[in-house]
Image 1 (cartoon, rainbow, N blue to C red):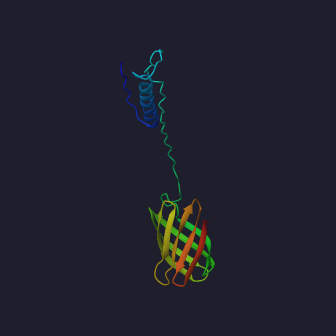
Image 2 (tube, one colour):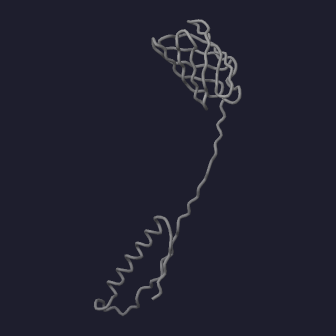
Length: 162
């Protein structure tokens, strides 16, 4: 009897091979010497047709453009804040790469310097000197929003490019 060996990978091939071994053992037990009186010819040992699944890999590249490109956040932004303190503000930014600098004019506290960074859509900035206010949030197109914190408490903020 001629033996065929098929090398394959994947679960389907392993399952088919396992079934083939089980069928061969069953056929040998039933049709072997001393047990059966059947005069039919032995079962064919040719392997059944095997369908090997094909793996298709697809790669999709998505490009996200934010306003963080060269100078994208530069300019005037107007917004509101609420929580422990509430009011309006005007940001005047200058962006250089991922660094931000400028001023913020709060309706409740006057104008002060701010510095910050932008990384993708994430933005962080805060006041320089005086009462420390820390802002974190995200930027999407001509709008940004997030939360602020001070020693006295915090809240939320949002702004749009003017």
